[in-house]
Amino acid sequence: LGEQPKADARGTPMEALRVDFPRLAGPAVRTLPLLAIVAHTLLCPHTKVEESFNLQAVHDLLYKRSELATYDHLEFPGVVPRTFLSPLALAFVAGPAAIVGGALGLSRKAWVQLAVRLVLGGASALGLGGVGRGVDAKFGKAAGGLFAIVSACQFHLPFYASRTLPNTFALLFANASLGLWLEGKHESSLLALVPAIAVLRAELVLWLAPLGFLLLCQQKVKFSRVLLKGVILGLLCLTVTVPLDSIFWGRWLWPEGEVLIFNTLQNQSSKWGTSPLHWYFTSALPRALGGALPLSLVGALLEQRARAPVGLTIASVALYSLLPHKELRFILYAVPALNVAAAVGAAHLLLLSRSGTNSTSKGGSSSLVHWTARLTLAALAVGTCALTLVSTAASRHNYPGAEALLALHRLAPPTGKYGCCRVHVDAAAAMSGVSLFLQDDAHFNYSKAEYSEFKAVPFKMRDAEFTHLVTARARVPGFRLIYAAEGFERLQLWPPALRLAPRIHVLERERI
Image (cartoon, rainbow, N blue to C red; front, side, top):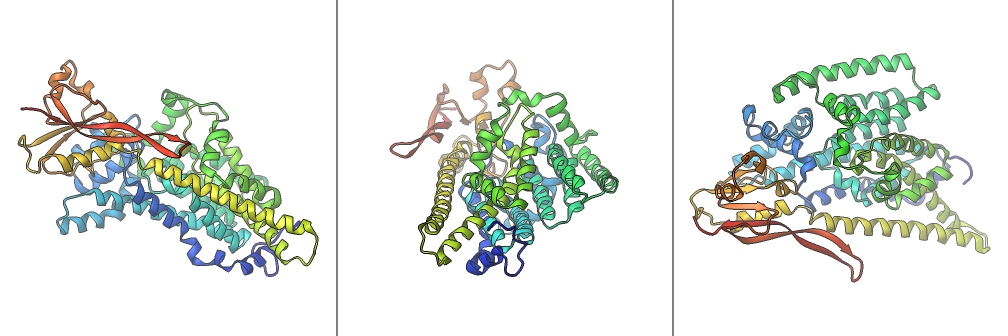
């Protein structure tokens, strides 16, 4: 075990592991990330405000098409502009779902939203499959199978894989880069990050820089050659994103350039909260990785080739830590890289358990190593799965806005007791699940106008404009409560339970 095994060569420990555990190299194991992504999508089909731009853009592209002046982003532009390239690609692939729905006369568009998310989830699963093939090439097919298992057991990676966040689209390129690097395609691994940096998430340069530095030190790439190709590719991306996005936004702009200035030079993102320097290492990564965290350390300790993914991740996350505003999704790209090391660590523990089983020694030390390795793997697997189950159960209750709107569709008079029902969706409801795909009841006219847009109009007169309110307010004069959607409040340790509390209320006007 002290010798470094070659990648899947005949007679090495990793090859012996593949022989002893043939299912790890089989195709069934490789489908686990896809199954996990689909499960998370079906269990939590709704979305939150961070996903709204891309999701609403896909809706408008599918249903409003050339009517650009009516697109949602012009009324609710958000803090910074985003590119339309990613929703265009998603709408193109998911478009048949909308076409089929229209042909069949299906009035509900919520299932099209689900189809859109499943398309993105499928692309994410393909990206993880590419990383798995890289693990096959570098560490052996057994380690590749363990990578699939580790990734599927976690919560955050499969959960975010189908969410229409810019980070999720960028993760597709980050995974492509990681897989190419593991396969030894060094120059391509660097160039794969360029489109994501130019169009989706400019801060991915913080992943490009450590990887590029490592490859230059190892003399795997030529600086002038890769720089020239990167600049040309970046300029080509700009020639696409700038004119296209300028059409959709109605002004000349480079969306990701404005985001970069907003987040870094102006440091405006700090208005949404700040975290200490160590937060990514002491909070975000432990929660995202679960049992993969200690396994990645085991992999780096026992396998020299697994140290590079760990070292690059530490360097990149350290650079990210310099930005005051921190969110777990900002370093989602770190999870697959550390899962590679975790898979190698799990492989070495399996090797230890195998050596204990096959040992002819009657001594107790071999048996102790064998059972320690097996119990460690079992404990980490059970703990990670338990964390995932609890997190999934809590997340199902994080979309009270969507639940409230769907309840309104069920409870309101089907023909509109007040003629045409006019419903106002406030900011709290819009941020917790309400999307254009859910605003599909023909009996309602929907408004998401913020109260600041009513200017000096008193609350009473504002509310009088509507027959129904989907709001965080529990009481409004002249309205009666017909439904209260509960949201996750906290986890009760004993007796174990999820504590819920009313979050979004559906109010109906008492009289005309």
